[in-house]
Image 1 (spheres, rainbow, N blue to C red):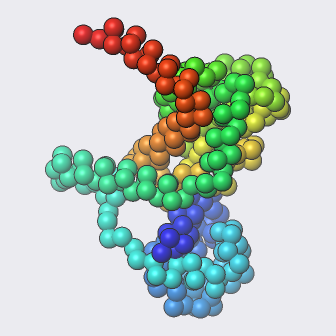
Image 2 (cartoon, helix red, strand yellow):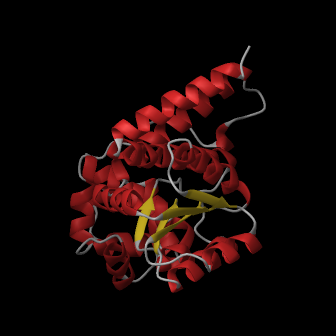
Image 3 (tube, rainbow, N blue to C red):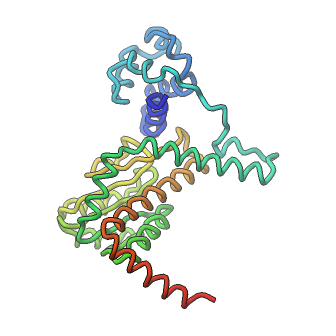
Length: 283
C-alpha cells in the first residue's frame, strides 16, 4: 500500500512538468489506479491512444523498470473517497464545511509529505546546516514569509543565519558566500527565476545548496546539492498551494529543531534567555 501511494504521489509531484503525452498517461493512471492493474500495456495504449514505448518511458521516469513494475506498485491501492481540492469547495458550503475541507487538505498534505520525504536527503540537509559557517535562506514572493520564519527559528538560538526576499539583495548576498556556507532556497513551483539565479550564484562561489520545493523535475533541482521535495496535488489550485506551503513550514521546523538539538545545552540556555526578555515585553 505504501509503495502504491508513493507511486501516485510521484506522479502528482511531477505532473506540472510532464509533456502532453506524459500528462495523458498520468491522467489515466491517476483516474484508474485500481483498474490499471488488470490491463495489459497494449490495452492501455489503445485506450488512451499513445505508443506503448511512451508508456514504458513514462514508467522509467517514475524510476520503475517498466509497465509490469507500475502495475506491481499500484497493486492493492485503494483510492480515498474524499474531496479535498479547493475546486470542490462550492458556494453552497457552510463555513464549518469549508473549515473542515481546508483542515483535511492540510492534514493530508502533511501525511503524504512525511511519507514521501527522502530521509537520506533530509539527513544530508541536517548535517550541512549543523556544520555551516553561515546559512542564507532565499525565498521570493509567496515563499518570503516562510524563509523569514526559518530565519527567526535559527536566529533565536544563536545560529549565524540570514534571509533574503528581495532579488537584488539576494544576488549580492549570494556573491559573498563561500564553501563553508549553505544557501537554502524555497520555491513551491521550483520555477522562481529570482531564487534560482541567487542560488546559482551562491553555488558558483562554492556554497552548498539545499532546495525545498513541491515539484520533481523543476528547474531549481538542477542546482541543488540536496533536494527536499514535499507533496503537491496534480493541479495547482489555491488549497493545494497553501497545503504545500504548510508542508514547507513543517519541514523547515524539523530542520531547525535538528540544528538546535545538535547543540542542546547552548540552545536551551539561549531559549531561556529569550523567554525572559520576551516575558518582560508582555502584559
